[in-house]
Length: 406
Image (tube, rainbow, N blue to C red; front, side):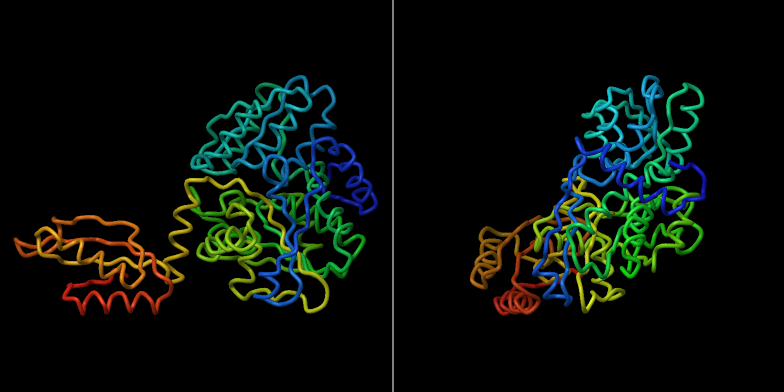
């Protein structure tokens, strides 16, 4: 495999097939799943490439296996990398497969579930600083100090070739692939997949997607300090020296999506396709939700779900947010007489309107109340915004003083 920025198509095409052969005992050929819901909602034929069902929960095992398989004696000294979590897991499992020591530098705020899984595969997890880029720098320094083999999360020809095996699978599984939407962080998956596909089917339109809070492929710059985003796995501040030229040449368009659309995409995938997908893996759907991309009229549109390693503790917050935005949650502040039976009367009104009480909290401080009043914060599950209005109207008709929380 060439290690310069010169990447002849003939060499890389052979490298994709070789990478698939090297990983065949570990890497799964993940399914392409049709989505009737998404196809009906957005039009066209939409399918999902379910890399969230891959070993370690993301595509990263593809590149990790291809890299480690070619290290030779370097495997004896061990491998080291910097990663927000998915590359860490992929490399850790690959190292375990080959019997190599593995050290991973992880940035602050990385997914707890990804860190735990990385440790489960036998890797040593170390503090990588404020961002993926600082973690990568720390890993490079450790490689120089110890002689361990540094494994870049994306900017390495062998890693790119490994990630590109996903493209080979798509060409085998989708006869009429017309439009392909892929998450974009450092660019290993996008560059490898685009090249693997375009060298055989140059007319396939390929879109890369970044989170708007960290989109250096679009803006050329990235924010200072830690980036707060649901798409932590693709919050990479610096395009790669190998990946950027490939993406510039082979990718048709790069789009940025905001945090609201990413949150919506995660919940929609969970609710309507039964796919558990992390924020960085769901950004492809965000392009449809924000009307930036229209599915192909002829042929198939494929959205790559690049990872499913989401912190479980985040899911209730996403669900509550989504149900609030959809008008299925209603939060009210109610002033009640401070005497027995007052709260029961409010609950009876809600029950009569078929609104389910989710949470009740007494609030006696920080609000203006009569000495003989108490404040109640109540959260209700309702069917729709119209249903919410009927609940409020019924409560007011029953004499309750209602303040709707926006």
